[in-house]
Amino acid sequence: MELSGEKRNTIIGRIDASDIMHGKDWVMLTYENGDPYRGHCKGNGSEPGEKRRAKIMFVCDEGASDVKARQPRVVEEMTNTTMGCYYLFEINTIVVCQTRPLRTIGLSTGTILIIVFVCVATFCLLAGVIYKRVMLKAKGLEQTRNIDFWKNFGNLEAMLTQTKKI
Image (cartoon, rainbow, N blue to C red; front, side, top):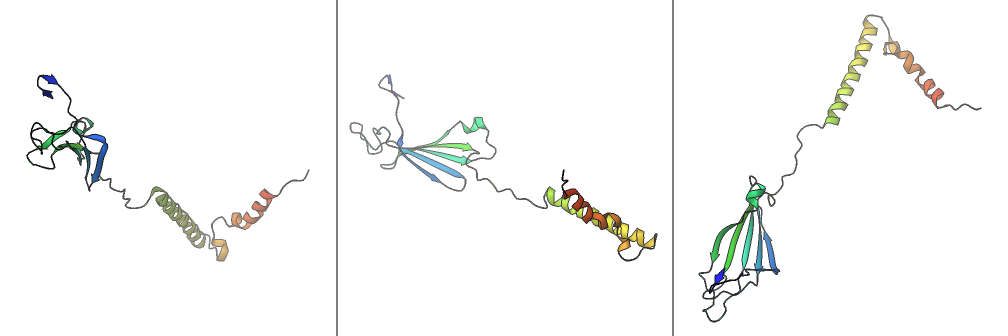
């Protein structure tokens, strides 16, 4: 900002005098205690007026890119009142957008694999029983598929867990 032929920076808010507010899809940072106004906002030119205040509003924009998010837009400079003057900036960004929870619809991969395994095992068991009953005329427990394996299963397990003594 140039005043009386010299360049001078104007402070519109300080980080140690800040406030934050938020809503569903926006966040507003307010920085207060900037340089006083001169000529408006209670300032008459010779005496300093109200201290400057900056409001930066981050608005949800899911289509915003990083480049667009870095470019603040000056919405207004409210200086035509006697009190409550401020600068309002707006930045569109995806950062303040509320994230939607992941919703899983349907069954997980593990559940599907278990269902497929149970269905295949049941089909094999029933197909074996039907084959033995119809083709081999088996009755009772003899209809069970691989009956010799199941009869000896307990003995096989005992043999595998038995330790040899040297």
